[in-house]
Length: 287
Image (cartoon, rainbow, N blue to C red):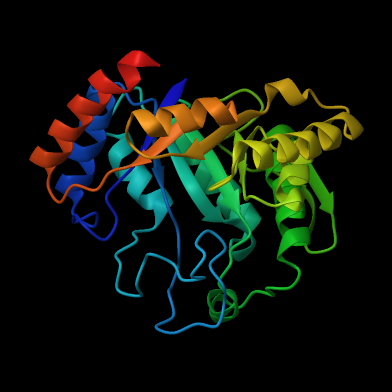
């Protein structure tokens, strides 16, 4: 099993360049395969939207929680690391211009030596989508199309696209990603629609907070969608977040996932390093 780590949002100074670099280096040193960062362009002080991953419907992040832009943050740590993969967990795809995003991702993938993973989500905050100037209600269709747009730009020597939301003809986007086939796209979400999207379009699937029975159900929907799209479902890597302990590992094993991500909760680098060392010995060493 692979292991990824989320930096300590709301606890440590993630906006500090020194902290970001040293945290990433510690994760790489202690054997984490990947580093996962989150995204909100803005957070409203109050909101009517329902956070789907907690029974309260409220996000654990306040409006004041520091959330640096994920691609800029990953670019900063890419230059100071060598092996650890650089992932978004997740980027709100419908709020991005897909041509600009394709260029940003390809550039980062080249500069990092092919280490980028694009975790995508639709976004759950209507107030954020509206503030950014996007339509919250058609975000699913736009996300699907944006994936096609980016892959077209990465794949075609001279690209053309005629979609519902995006149209262009005879354009070139350079550089191309370092990874064959482009940057891997990991579809986030815990609904049947997300599982189908992962089957149709994803290189990976990233559900949160599901039981083993629910995971089996989602896997069936993902596999059926992959079959209908003439894709190999067994090649779709499954990732989830779990508690950073032996029980979390048992949970990840019960789900049958390929990657277990844990969230760091330490306020400083010394504490984070000590925690990573223990986790590597007690959990990663037994996987």
